[in-house]
Length: 235
Image (tube, rainbow, N blue to C red; front, side, top):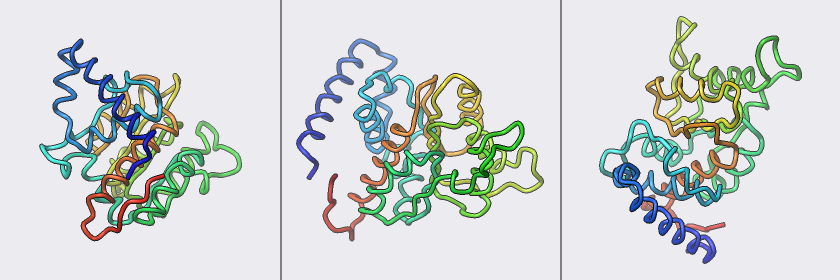
């Protein structure tokens, strides 16, 4: 069972979302279209950030198809349940996801900075260089980007073949929520246009805590759905 504080928080989040739906018919339609798995991700992100406004800005592409197995979240949950590698752009996001991964499917959780040079290449960043090296070695199932838009841009270039003769295999899911004001909007727009299965947060908001919350929601949901799994151990 979930901790009582978490359960009460989710109850209050659902009440707030209900109030928002009554005041905003467009948002009401948007929320009504969410699958249970997408709703889990949204609620966990709101719980992590304390910001109900995320209901307006969170996007799932492709959207779920009438059941928790559909869409981007379904693809990500399946990859996690298969034990595929989780790649993050920050050590903070990796640290936030690793305990849930360890308690569920035992996914390896790694950060691109483990592959980054000590000094950023000219005109680039350590995160971008680390992303390029990590993608070529790991073939991750789920990629979390909460800080570095440059890392997101490199991922998109490498898996869509933009600028390379041969593209790398795409991850099952990209959770793209870089935070900030320089290059962030552009990278999120490129992600939106990429055709990759992804969850993104419009605008300047984002961060390690949010991408970790989204991933942990998928790990938890996939674990609870696994028929052969022992009882879930919350925490």
